[in-house]
Image (cartoon, rainbow, N blue to C red; front, top):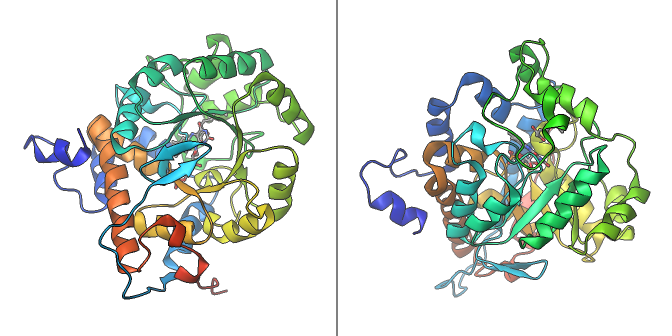
Length: 378
Ligand SMILES: Cc1cc2nc3c(=O)[nH]c(=O)nc-3n(C[C@H](O)[C@H](O)[C@H](O)COP(=O)(O)O)c2cc1C
Ligand SMILES: CCCCCCC(=O)C(=O)O
């Protein structure tokens, strides 16, 4: 069942006729506890980077070509050997059960209905195996480099055994960003929700409310290994034959190092503005990374993508695919699997529409000449 069918059928759909992804945001806002909402929406420190990710997309101008046959617009793409119906996928986000009882199992169903990639967080609230059983489209597994390397080795083995297609190592979080909303809320992961793939002994701090701090930040300080460097990637490589994707690259220097150390793909990401505040908007960093990589590996982007026209801009500037973080959680909170598929289908329809009006009937015909990215006014 596609999301459109799901929404057309019962008059009880909680998000009737969403016109833009922001309609899912509004619906999610009405359903979530304030502290969970702050955890989802919030960013690090002044949240300047959260806003900059969005502002960068508003500086894009489109340059349409005309008298092109656009009677069929194809959003299909290929990524690390897998065919996808859409270049829009789901970024890894922790603890989907915070926003919907069916958590990542529903997210996997929604992504499958849309034919979209789903990157599963190491902090998923369902097991890798249950998520895989619900999936009908490619899954990748995201890791943070935990001090407990035995857990990493176990996870990459389990992921391969149930068909995950890549390992994504997030490299922008040697410690957690200073998230003032979570600190003020003393945010902790509530009872009944757990990181289903990790040893509970590692997770204690993440569940301690009432400290006056973010329990997740305390957990990260305990559990994440901040001493990891480029040379450690070989350790992970030796334990998995799956392609290795590095998420959180923002500079040409690190992009070149990633290629040199054998990364199979790169995600240009500032973690949705949740880690180092005042990093560049991902759209502004994209061309630098794409140029440094020189086509050696695919480059993906996340951060601030809120519709098909944003995706069009990122794809034109060289991204092979684009990931949605918060919007997937809005869809999940609003309407479970149908909401996730609804977000992906709506954004993909918007992308196809933009492609038609811009005279670019397939992703291969999209290049930098399709957009102008105006410099930021100082
Ligand atoms: C609630 C939440 C949880 C997140 N959890 C993770 C995570 O577990 N691993 C990770 O690599 N990134 C995580 N991220 C960052 C996302 O993968 C992604 O980089 C970011 O959300 C993209 O920006 P967007 O939300 O503006 O689309 C999280 C983001 C949010 C909003
Ligand atoms: C590394 C400790 C917990 C991380 C929580 C998920 C996440 O990455 C986020 O942005 O939030």
